[in-house]
Image (tube, rainbow, N blue to C red; front, side, top):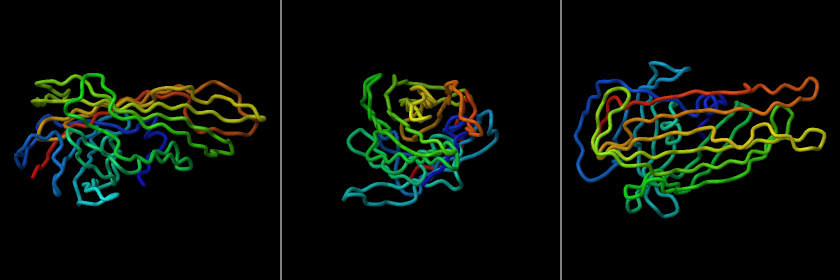
Length: 263
């Protein structure tokens, strides 16, 4: 299970940046926005308020079979920092028509003591022929956990949405790509607790994470921009009760593709 601290979700879920000079090691072939052969790899430079000059290395480790279907399994060289590498690390993908489907566990921890484990099954992370603003996949659920002695109920929704395709796109780092199709990932969350038997809101329903992934033809994700923003509700905790979460957060992270190899 991938574990990301609360600051990695609210003050991170996940951060991103890229170098201006990308080196392509092997040219790709075929009409694919996400080449998924074993040995393909992508190196990303990370930039955010909390992580600068950091690097993620993502590669396709092996083929695997889940429920009789063939998938390719992702892995990162080290514990990932960026949002995109975090949601793919240790998980599996397969192609179905023009879609890329993700299966695995999106482990998101608000703190080390509060694991959030989203089990995804064929969640659509990309669709080549989707119309602008078309909803690709939705995952909703409720998690009940205890945190610092408080019972928490977390209602969440994770969804992916297609955006307008671009013939040419230049990243903030200055690298230009052709035939780019962005996909937006949105994580909405609501948290409540019980005090003296009464429900009390901690976090009203908010899009706490919004990440845009830019897929380039025959390469894969070349840039990702993630914003983590939230505002907790103001309420009085019982005496001697600590709730070690900052009352608000607003952080932007970028992942820029640096070097890559496509077989």
